[in-house]
Amino acid sequence: MVIFQWLGELVVQRAGVIVPGSLMGMLLLLIFLAYPSRLASIVEPVSNRLIQNLSLLFIPACVGVFFLGPAISLQIRLLMVVIALSTLLAIIFMAVLIKTIGADKND
Image (cartoon, rainbow, N blue to C red; front, top):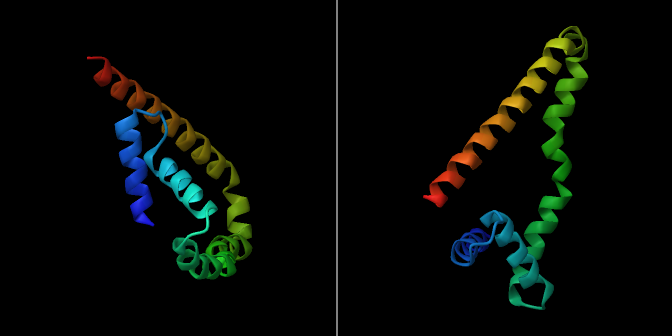
């Protein structure tokens, strides 16, 4: 449903709404699927298949934790430091990015 993502981007750009375009696209898709239409019958089999196999997306992480438990427990402190630092760096990067974009709009 890339069309709805594109429509969401278009709505955000035209209306000047402070919402990510992909989120707006998902809201448009939700609104469109709430009413009886032909699109719902097209999306339903695909979405049902994805939901049935959703657990497959979590298998690699679960297997890694299951088989690498002893190795992970030896490095847990380092993992926690890396997770904390990467989160902090992501927050700082996004703050700088938002400030830079906001400064460009004010000029």
